[in-house]
Amino acid sequence: MIRKRFIHSILFALIDGLMGGLSWSLFFAYRKYFIESDKFGYQIPVELDSNFYKALLLIPVYWIGLYFLAGQYKDVWRKSRISEISKTFSITVVGVVLLFFALLLDDAVSSYQSYYKSILILFSLHFVFTLFVRIVSASWIKFLLRKQKIGFNTIVLGNNTKTHQLLLELMNSHAIQGNIFKGFVSLNGDDVGHILKGVLPHLGDYLKLPELIEKYEIEEVIIGIDSSEHADINKVTNLLEDQQVVLKIIPDVFDLMSGQVRMSNVIGTALIEINHDSMPQWQKILKRVIDVFVSACVLILASPLFFVIAIAVKFGSNGPVFYKQIRIGYKGKPFHIIKFRTMIQDSEVAGPMLSSANDKRITPVGKWLRKYRLDEIPQFINVLKGEMSLVGPRPERKFYIDQIVQIAPHYKHLHRVKPGITSWGQVKYGYAENVEQMVERLKFDILYIENRSIAIDFRILIYTVLTVLQGKGR
Image (cartoon, rainbow, N blue to C red; front, side, top):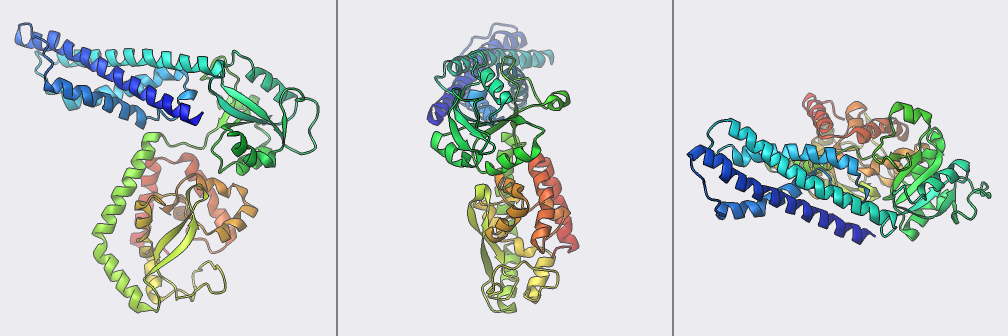
């Protein structure tokens, strides 16, 4: 299924490129027949010169890139024909305006009205052609989903009347939501009754979900309990935090009244998708570009300071210049974080220990480095390697994560994003001296993840720079 979906994504991208090239070719002819002919007073012949062929190669790539940045090829099987209209319209507006300033502003025209006509014609051509093939493509996908030629392997959580009713709706051939049901799991091991008997096979308790997801290549888990059952839903979401599946729940009346349920599929069953990914695709790409650019600039421009700090650390106390420690990062993968050493050598011979305000293990040089957070500079290497970001939750050691999870199981949500050199939790709360303070700081990092954007990243970076300049670090 994954391979087939990838092929469809490539196919849709090629179709977008083809429509971009077709609309540009027709627009090229329009410019010759009308805009330039009106300017010079005689009919300009349409000659396909080298500029035309260059544009014919570059314009499709331009449009594909723009749609990619907008996340249009992320999951083509979940496309809605209704949303395609608004998305295609907004992307076409942006794309045409950029093309106008890049390529059309220098056109020879008889009046400024010709510019307006050019923009309108280019927009109309691209929007009509692209929207037409996108609607056809989305309809084709819906047909394949209805016939179950493609679909999403799904497990249902719950065994009650509401779950049974939900299944009957989703299994309706007119719902077209593409679920291929593999079975159901019960929330509690003792609630297996007769309600879903004969409808779906019982696959066990919900604790087996990670195992079942791998076995059946599950892509969706539908939670057949009310969204108001927060404790039960949290148990499931925490368990599946590191699983690449879509979670959906049944909305209650409050969800419907509060507008949390959006109608993108008129015929389909109303479900709330638990979506923690608030950052658009183009912002994710821009965030990575900023990470690489800023990190490279800092490492180059700060290299003299880098050298001075290295000498101070080396001669300030016995031990290496750099301190490497295994931390847990994106998707729970371990990596070596790099810092300037600020403590005496073998400072943790008795086991992992968090530092405190008056920690005697911190060297005189290390105390100064921590005050201005200069010990963090080598972490820009981690950012360049893609292990960290400029902004993100601070990575912790597994030793402390295991303790935090016992108190706050939702800590695993932090692994949905790359850890950062600085974080909202660090700005608002500062360094933690014990596990309880780590848990207290956690709410700020969760708040960041649920609302992250480039704008918030810049705010956090500004606060961090002010903290460094004021020497408020520790």
